[in-house]
Image (tube, rainbow, N blue to C red; front, side, top):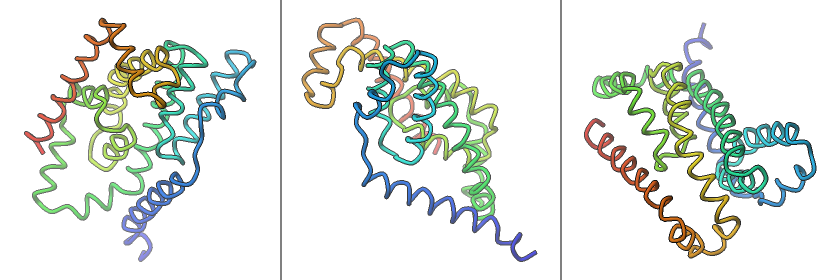
Length: 226
């Protein structure tokens, strides 16, 4: 009985230590685009796609800051459309894993530890409209990893969050893939290459203004409600 009494606290401690360890390890292990592209070169498209999803989910779970490399590698290997689809599927899998990881290990502790003021905040978070959740997923402001974990720690329903993942994520994912496909590896080597690409594609620049609006909406919502 004593173990059950303190299980929520131990679960939250395990979650916090695991995230800290993964962040620490991520600072020492680095991958590049070539290390992803070479193993997939020459493989049938179905096989390489499945391997890419597996690598994306596995590696990005342990290495916090490796997603940019997978975004670029995916664009170069599969093109903007297929790579966007594969990353979307991978992010949906990540959302499922991280949501339930936070829900199982941290939710009980958070619920137990919240004061009256924060309980009201927790209730408001659980009532966030689907439209706003979609904006949070679409705006390139809050990393998906933090959204997934935060959603699991609140009383937000899983089905509601996953629906937001499905509806909101493609906007961000496919936009990034189209840009990376056009700029290529120069995006990490020459900042001016990105500017030059937008100058050559004014239509994409106009579409990118949507992101400015989405970011503004996220900032407005956070400052107004929380």
